[in-house]
Image (cartoon, rainbow, N blue to C red; front, side, top):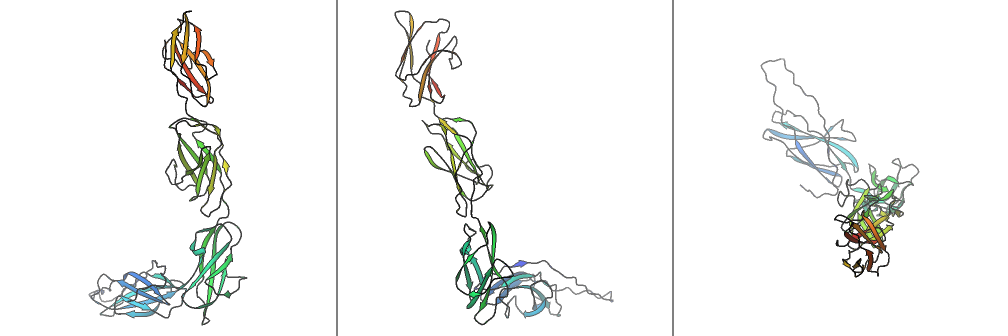
Amino acid sequence: MNRYLVLIALVTLVMAGCDRTIESKDPVRSVPEPPPSPTNIQVFVSAASLSLDWSVTDSSNIVRYRIYVADTLPVNFRLHDSSTGTEATLTNLLINRLYYIRIASVDNDLLEGEPSSPVSATIGYSSITINSGAEFTNGRDVLIQVNSSAPASQVILSEDSTFAGANFIPWAPERAFTLSAGDGDKIVYGLLVFGDGSQSGERLEDRITLDSQAEIDSVFITPANTVFGFGDLVTFGLDAGDVFGAAQVSFTGVAGLTLFDDGTNGDPTPNDGVYYGRYEVPVNANLYRDVVTGTFTDQAGNDALPVVATELLNLNTPPDPVDLALTINPLGQNEFTWTQSLEPDFQSYRLYASATSPVDTTDTEITIVRDPLVTLYVAPSDVTRPYYRLFVFDQHGAAAGSDEVQ
């Protein structure tokens, strides 16, 4: 059997059945066992014909199979053909017409068994596709490919399934078409007139989604209102309300950080239209109140207007600590010296003292030195606070403490 296909038909199983009883007034006589119903029916479509094959659980007592056909609806089946084997080819069928098929077994006693469940197939070798089968378009002007294995002379195209107000135009492999206004799903219907004057029996159709704009609802940083330091993970989010797009955020030093909507890289829920991405703060990063801008391109190719995050970004690596030394000068004073800070974001040196160790910035502040070149401070000795530590502060409040001296 020739299995080369011109078009694969949509085959669906349709549950159906009928009641069958055999009444007898003779209580001794048993009801004959009907032959098994065919199963596993497969349909192969060629030009204006259907090729079928099927199987039965036991074919030893079967002499023939009867093939019943109905069109449009699975009712009023009529005998179309028969076969002595488990395959057949049905001809004289109309193109683009939906047919329903049932097959029944006949045994040696000419008893016909329960027919199979119906299968359905649409005969046809014509089709239309919009923009070569694309799922989305961002413009109303599209190209419709009109495909036919038989010579066609005219075609009619419309978004109205009744073709009201539309006219037949000369057939061409590709025709320009303008979709109706308004984003959303669009269905284009078509009919063909063939060279012999016949017309396709069923509407051809294809679907595409018109998506002419993209928007960003918000851009955000989590956790919010945080100064991130070296090694911290900053999570950026962008809510577009549109899945399968491309989202990024940019800030000083980072031209485009990719965000994800697939359950990875900090994204908690895949395919919900909210995109996330993580950024690990590098060493010596220093950004203060920096603007984060989000961009988004949807799957139809539309670019949304950039949106700025509601929070400002603060990345701050603490300064390197300095080495502190304490000596007693001939006047009995505490003389503090330290190595110079090379912090480019330098704000001040601050000396703290405490009666107990360790010393931190909550203890008594002895002095503030705002010149990074000054590395000496002299103070009276104080036996009540014998522990000292020098902190380097940057302009954004980050600090690093020296070793502790006594």
